[in-house]
Amino acid sequence: MKKTWGIVGLGWLGSELATELQKKNHKTWGTHSQDFNFYSHSFPSTPYDVLFLNTPPLTQLTPATYAAKINKIEGSKIIFISSTSVYGYNKGLITESSVPEPKTESARWLVEVESALQDKFKEELTIIRPGGLIGGDRHPVYSLSRKNEVPNGDAVINLIHRLDLMSICIAAANDRSIRLINAVAPHHPKKKDYYSQWASKLNLPKPIFLGETEANKQIDSETLPTLHSRWICPKLDFL
Image (cartoon, rainbow, N blue to C red; front, side, top):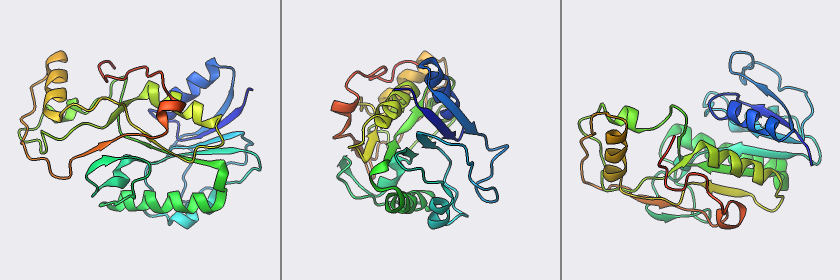
């Protein structure tokens, strides 16, 4: 069934999602940060079947105000892009059953917005918590390669490719039973191994890693094996 998607945040992820949806003959409308300010503008009144909320943490806006701004359309689906940063202080194996322990202001804001949206939209809402994002011209190795001391070299990575994340978002829009998704690829090598390999591949200086594993955690999903069983980039080995 063809749907109308409203994409609030036509950036690195949202613009590519819009292109993919249009290929599948869905209709889309969206907002850019240049023309829509969550702090001062009224929320768009354009109708939607699926609303994709992909804004950075707007910590100067209270979570209650953020949720109140969003127009509620009966029978619609809301997808809110959060982050695995909400698991900040947790260690070990993390799934959707794990309780968030945010350690930054942005992560605390995300947790509170998740709760406010759940109160407002209930079963119409799916929260997606992506890991670190790669794809196109984006990969953490570009910034890490310039550093001489990268902490937690023996910790594992928790990343996802943009193509897989978009596929998960589209699948979630068609599933009314799923409330929360940890969107992280199943590949979890050590940081020092994975980023050193990518530095060699891109002819970048290899980062110098420290070996401690403070707050080491592996983030997995109890939901994705059924919702998204066919990974596009499971090994995180291309952009």
